[in-house]
Amino acid sequence: MPETQKVALIAGASGLVGSYCLQFLLQSEQYNKVIALVRHNLPVQHPKLEQLVVDFDQLNQYKSQLKADDVYCCLGTTIKQAGSNENFFKVDYAYVYQLAALTSANAASQFLLVSAMGADANSVIFYSKVKGQIENAVKTLTFRAIHIFQPSLLLGNRTEKRTGESMAQALMPKFSFLLVGGLRKYRPVAAADVAKAMVLTAQQNITGLHYYPSDKIIKEAQKVLL
Image (cartoon, rainbow, N blue to C red; front, side):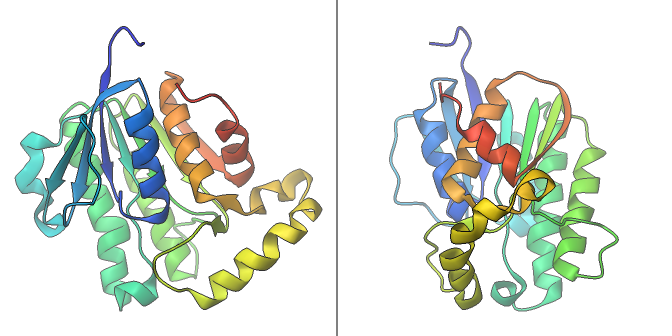
């Protein structure tokens, strides 16, 4: 049992990575309280879980309640789900940045962000460009440590159907063995492994800015969760 237990805050706990992340946080002895920012209450009950129903468009109104040691940001959507580039930007940039800025102001120690492979603020691909922009924005804020996870294709069961992604999930694992050396970062990675790697990374008490492509995520996820 850790001598000093901590408080974790998670946003995006209803998503593919976020739902696993919430499970691991509740299991971890490192935390005696887990605050989940949600739009609607999740069907999850646990003695150390506190669900905070928020309006992400008015997140600054909840600043006094956004106090935690480690902040896990699993927010994210797709342009198809969002319905427009503008709405995608709002979720994947504006919400994420506001969460990071508010928790930084509240002296959070670590910020752990789920981004994506290929994130590049100069990309001509809108999705990759926004991911790169939010990475750059978060890096300007004050945290003891910032961990940015950049998974390739995510493996797992989503609630919504994504035909192209479903086909890729079926085919890519069969050819992963071909992705060696510098190509390892393109290997598909299980959403559960991304979540586990995030929780394990936060336990390591390291400082500074760190990036985790798929191959590093898989390596981190093989460690023992405490």
